[in-house]
Amino acid sequence: MLDAQLAQRIVDRTMPIIGYNINVMNNAGLVVASGESSRIGQTHDGALLALSRKTSVEVTSEDCKLLSGVKPGVNLLLKHKNAILGVVGITGEPNEIRGVAELVAMTAELIIDQADLLEKVQRDRRYRDEFILACLTGRLSPSEMRDGAEQISVNPSDSWELLLVEMPTQDSSTATLTERLYQKPGHHLCAHLSARHLVIFVPTEQPLSADSVNEWLHWLEQTPCRNLKVSTGKFAHRLEEWQTAYNSALQVMKIGKAARPKNTVYLLDDYQLPVLLAPLHGTWQGEQLSQMTATLVEHDKSGQLIATLEAYFDANGSANETASKLFIHRNTLKYRLDKITEITGFETTDFSHMAQLYLAIQLGKLS
Image (tube, rainbow, N blue to C red):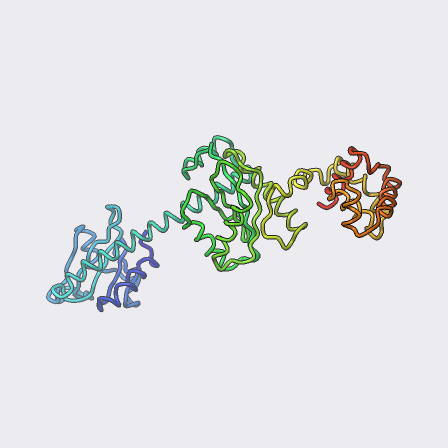
């Protein structure tokens, strides 16, 4: 607990205030920090006496005449949670520094307490990050998930909205963003997944609205972090659904960035169909679906027919609206739709045929 770095911090903080040299010794009586660097690593006789007697030891100028290599001073025990960690020694005549020495010892113990608390906070954060990552990657059994949730004070039955946050680069602002999330009031959870990605779990009984997600993004960008992107996944009604929420948010982020790279927020509601089709990519079912438009793509070198078909879908099959959107005459539109039927064998007036073509085009976009 009392390492050289912490001991030196005690020396550096207190010496400029009191104006006396300070030595910090470990529980073996070795000097681990000092205002006189030459003392580091040496055995401190005053500290050994204090440790053996388990009480403060004062050394006067008269005492020094009887001892070799000892300077006058006051040596006080450093304690933490009733355990003796070491000794702090202040060099000087005891009558002059006795009161100051008590303050130095008290300050040193406060610094130790603070360091211990910070270490615990960091340890808890690491555990929480590791637990969340294990949940999201499916490495835990249901019982392990429940046990881990109890450790971080999470009710397994609570419902959550997952926000996946992507940062453009990894720099010092990333740590600032993470720290701000930890300090934000509320019962949300957050964890770093990689250098550029983190997740935020927001406790809520229903999915967050678009406005709420945008509010979160606005809050996140109050730090030096800029150009963030946020996506949502499937709403998690309980702990066991965290992994699905995460995987779907990943798909939404990937598909959303490809479709609308300038956007900053990607909601599952806006990408439901592409996300549902994504698992078909690379399967025989997906290949079967893709073949429905493969011939059309082969014959449509300019991309005009595909663009017409997409406009037709966007207009919900309205010929007038499609023609207006493409700035063409209805007869031109009819010619193009007939050409699509001729190439694919799918009637543009048949709902079943159109549904298959629509799915095939959406799947094609994923590749």
